[in-house]
Every structure is written in structure tokens, then in C-alpha cells.
Amino acid sequence: MQFFLRRSGLRAFVSLFQDWYERTLTQLCRQDPLPREPHWSAAFAVGSRRWLSRLAGGDLRLEEHIRPLDGKSEAAREDTCVLNPPQSAFGRIWDSLVKGGYR
Image 1 (cartoon, rainbow, N blue to C red):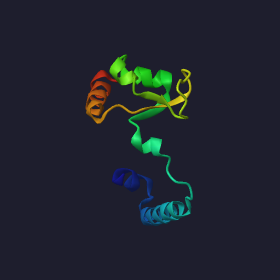
Image 2: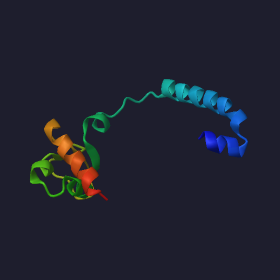
Image 3: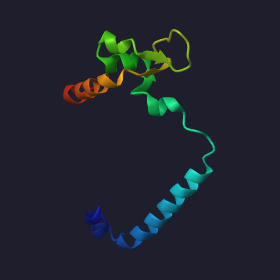
Image 4: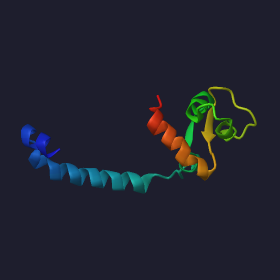
């Protein structure tokens, strides 16, 4: 960032931008009346059933933890779902994503 600022001649604007950015974030946080939807914080992943199945890598022990977001008992392949595996599975999923280069 410092290299860019030296080259662009914008160094003088950094403190102005930082002040504006912090004030804007503070203002936006104060005016947000909507509570955070819990599935974004509680789930390992949120997406279509097809995408979550790919993420689970065919592991039936993980796929059994894919649930429709709207609480239906079944979900079509493109319905929004959540993957909520037991905490013990998080590391295994993460390692397979990192090592396997999930795409």
C-alpha cells in the first residue's frame, strides 16, 4: 500500500480516507436495524444442496448434516441449505479444502 501511495501521489489523502471510512462504518453499524440471521454464524457453510454435497466430498457422514434453510424436510438440489456437521468434523473438512484445492 505504501508503495502505491508513493507512486500515485495520493499519500496526502490517506488520513482523509481513513477518517471517512471509519465514520462511514460506524454510521452504518448504528443504523442497521436487522438482527443477524443465525445460520450465517452457526453453519459451517451455506449454499445449494449440490454445492454443499460437493463440499462434503461424497462423505455420507457429512452429507447427513445438510439441512434445508427454510426448515423443510427435503430440499431440491438448488434450494438454499446449511451444512452443520459436528464440531469434530470441521478440521477434517477444512483440511480437505486446503489440501485438495476445492474448486
